[in-house]
Amino acid sequence: MEISLAAEKIAHIGALPVTNSMLLSWIASIMLTIFAYLSTKQMSSIPQGIQNFFETVIELLFNTANSVLDDEEATKKYFPFVATLFIFIIANNWLGLIPGVGTIGIHEIKEGHEVLVPIFRAGTADLNTTLALAITTMIAVQVVGVAALGTFKYAKKFFNFKGPIDFFVGILELMSEFSKIISFSFRLFGNVFAGEVLLTVIAFLLPLIAPLPFFFLEIFVGFIQALVFTMLALVFIKGAIMEAH
Amino acid sequence: METTTGLSIEMVKAIAAAATIAIGAIAPAIAIGMIGSKGVESIGRNPESAGKVQTLAILAIAFAEAIAIYALVIALIVKFV
Image (cartoon, rainbow over all chains, first blue to last red; front, top):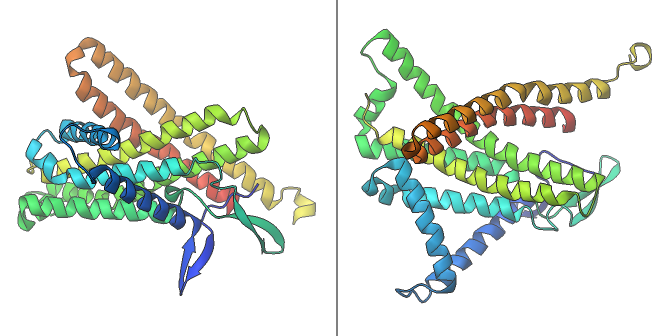
């Protein structure tokens, strides 16, 4: 039973190494692009089939975003970004549960003994992916704040010279922006990777029937983590566009 | 070192990994329980605010759970790296 914290490299494109989680996140992106193309190919007023399914998803996400942001104008502006976050994260999380991910692999010799290097691994089970998502989200939050309030007013939230306590709180807020990156990335990575480890261990101990409830748990956790990432991004966007009080 | 003291690095690693997650999950578990109980109590007292309370409660539970996840990641790093 091999469990590796870092995603293993399986190929090289020129000088760039390709890891197994990169491969699965590419597959997820291609799959989502194909679904998007198929559902908007012949758009009709009364949606049928795949267009109907995605319209339901979009409507649910829009209502969730609206309930957090409380402002329909703002929701329309920031909805594409957060909806993409949600759909990308949930697609990556759930693709990591398909049978074959983590088990189909190449036998390689590493440090003397033979290990199995899986060709597929959940995209979000790699700290690089989640770190990239976290950094992108936090940069987007800053950009949204500056765009909504203006550079000077937004900077005054962090560098507040009204008094010593306000100044200290401002510096603390600045540091918390960085800690949010860490917490975003580790929350998503920890949940998905721990889920993978749990499934591996249970399948190792009691294959076939016992992993079933754990698969349900992992489906649920994948959905909840995507939802939590999206809602937190929405809450931080709301905090960024709010006037300083 | 290994034959005389009887405590090898593998043993210490295993104990460290287990202790990290065991102790690190106590506080988040208590926190999530308290958040849940307060959330349910406030919805019971004011059913109209159910939507807002639910949103806030899920957010707070996610923050609390993140701490448990940090402990789990450290335990996994200790065990497997």
